[in-house]
Length: 244
Length: 265
Image (cartoon, rainbow over all chains, first blue to last red; front, top):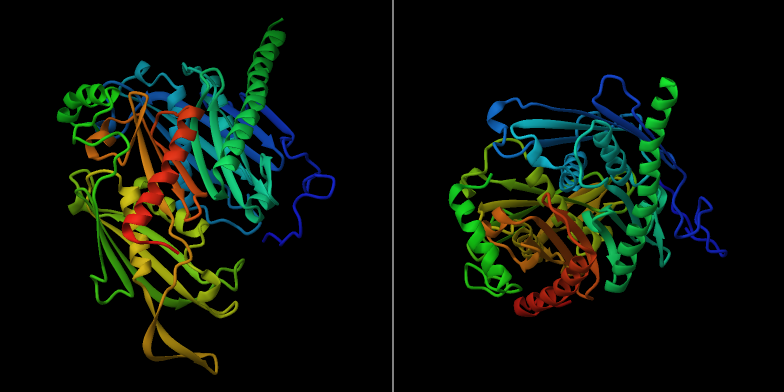
């Protein structure tokens, strides 16, 4: 359980984990981590540890669900029972069902869906450890897994949250900040196209704060995007080196 | 999935919207007529039916005594659930709630919860042991688009109509006394939903517009014009400019609706 922290921002303007308001948590991303999947990726963002795997394009069962003009993207966001303080039942919760939907809808605009009519692509996301902002990290890592699977995409999708704690607009909220803070606003963004593919918010923000938070989150997405590209590049450099 | 008729109309809808018009004659930012009836289910502690154009949503509030959540021992419990009843649309199937009804319930829940419309600490009977549990059940009766806004209105109308039985605690037991006390709401969160069609925003999409829209954006604001919940849906995207435009319109529209319904705190 989260404890009521007196203040989330100290007198030097630093957050409980020592970050500045506009600072991301340390991020480590790796592409191609599972041998069975067509594409896979792993992310650590602060204490978040998340795996994503992509299977497909493949034949869709039951067949009547297939679309004649495009593929079907299926997405499962799931948290491991041990990923949080108090054990989570492995059965999908209402939250996980909603998140599976919004994550799918954040990834869909990036994919050339019409290239694979009548097929399905499955995206499986397993949150192994959660510490706030897992839906964003899931989108970041799932879009890498899709790219790793060789799915034609318009852009990578990078995601990051912004929010408000102690009257300050901050980037990339961790669990305590999310629970105790006054607003959380996850955003997914395609930097090359400059468009937002996921936007949610809960909490209270004025119009001005809302605009500031959206722009800060987009700024975070752009920084994460650079790390995504680096991770993809790293995989192919390592393959090239092993060939030589 | 898109019906053949809608596919034919898609071009027409998109063309009209680029000229600033809509198939049902509304302006781009014009809301449909809202009709509200309250107190229609006698056995529920609170109830309401909302007609938003032809969209029809009923909400019943039931109250039970239960245990608080471990992390909020001094708060009552608010539970929002939505049923897309099969009689409301040919696309609704019987069965456990699917992702659409779960999303609907959670977006309505977020607006009520974050705006603190219901004073949850006031619903505490005995800290850590006994609290009132409010079940807000959304029942969609006819689907003609924009279920989120209609359900949010119906949920609020039902909560405004809710009364809790009088009681006193004797030796840890709850004794029901005659009479009822109305549940006082502290805020009126109003959800305003936009559809993006042909790169333009329209307010309060009806069914055919929803079937051809690229993406959906819901912005819920409170009485002070602050944003308390946001949800993007659909497989399209928005630009930052569109998001900020939508946020400003949502604040204005919500204010209009609150005034029209006489919902002021």
